[in-house]
Length: 218
Image 1: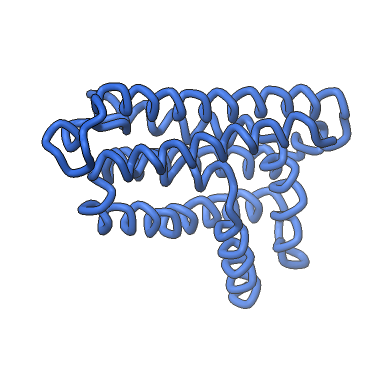
Image 2 (image 1 turned 60 degrees about the vertical axis):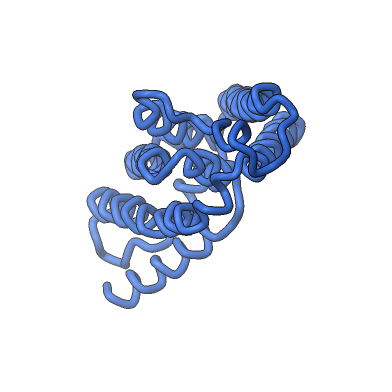
């Protein structure tokens, strides 16, 4: 079981390290502060655990077997991604307008904050992470194909897969928390509105591109 767990955590590391929409969203919300970033991570990992449970009960097999169901989720996920991307780009554009053309480093620019800091942004960040993950059909199909590979021979499948799903989610909380920490350590640079606005533009463009890719691929 120990060797299986080590191999499983190694695989989890490779999965987390692969760039994807969740990574972009976590970094984007981390610009608002540690709380928003961590809540996005928690939302994303709640989605991971839910897909793990669904896979444990074999329900994601229906999604993998049904082309119609998969395509519905794929289009839904694409709409969600594009929606997040457009929202981010609009936020960056609004911040630029409010900056009033001031030079970087001026008092007016430092007051501009395109990232969400309004009350309740923690709840919104959690919901964004959760929705992002649950709207991705690839996450569901991947959980179905990934978790069963690490169930030891002779072990009860359902409880073992539930435990593995929990380990997967907890491990990724720790992993993605490093992203949040790195962003917070760069606060001096990222607090400059011009830098944050550029990051918003890049992350928004990436999310839109990922959404379009999900919509057009089979």
